[in-house]
Length: 152
Image (cartoon, rainbow, N blue to C red):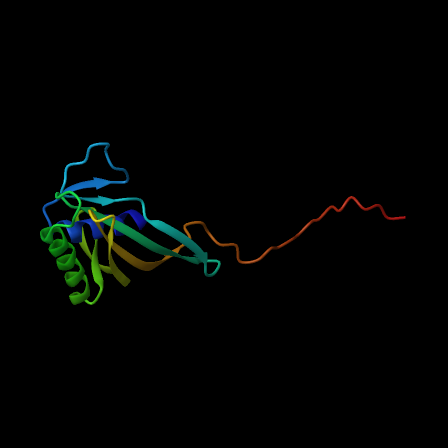
């Protein structure tokens, strides 16, 4: 589910760069150039009694090895990943336990932004739909309600 999607995106990108990878948090002293995969923003929405959806925004940060300005090589790496996503029709294949599945993630929006002169952000937006894992209740057979109101 969620973990497979995130790992599949990391795998898709890692096949396109050879940067040091940091996940979830950065060390105090990072090795540059590198890429940082923070925890994505996830917003859940109720759809029905059997299905829900998650909207994701993942701001993946690429740190340059050159101080005070973005080196062309890190920008080229981000542009290359961006282009690969777009040319793949915004589809990223999903892997489950190292095996390629027939499923894919449809990236709805891809953005590139430069932050603080040394960081380039690749922002991915996508939505996924999931089935609830708990059994649904078809109907209530009997409903007892005690209101503590006394009959006179």
